[in-house]
Image (cartoon, rainbow, N blue to C red; front, side, top):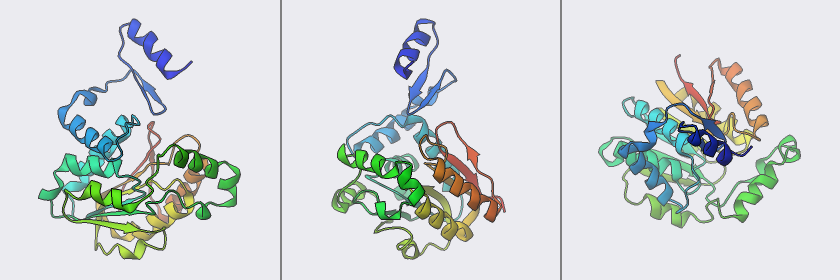
Length: 246
């Protein structure tokens, strides 16, 4: 039964349903009608001129960024692509009024397939990345990304592969970290590298953690969580949420 078909049935029964991005629920989602959310979300859509219906993922990210806004430290995103999520966040927070820097790390040329492990290649990660490239999902030039972010101050665009570019982030402290690299090795490297600089109460959002097709990414992140003694909240959006408490 498709999400669209199920949604039609539930509407006929008089129940509103959210059915997007692998998530189907009849629970309250009136954030979709909030004007501030819609303004931020549409700014995200503008970054690539395509709406992939990531509404609930963006809702989670805006909440996380709003918490981090009041904490000491800068923002970092590892895996920016065209800037959907970070654009929505900066719009929502009124970025130019904040005394923070947003570091944006990506190849800006699609996924770095050479970083995939043998197990990830066997699991089809490379084929999934190629499909994304074929349909134009991934950024292919940093020029367009720079153009997207030109309205905001204190933005540092860092082009290259992770972990090689991690040392270019010179933030003394970090209150918000978003990781979306579709590949476990650089994701683990990024979180392990930045963990000592995450502010107490700082928020880390993992885009791939529980998402369908990324089991190997979850297993690798769970191993790091055990090593670093932190807990990851698995969300039905496919994301993982960490709040640094110690």
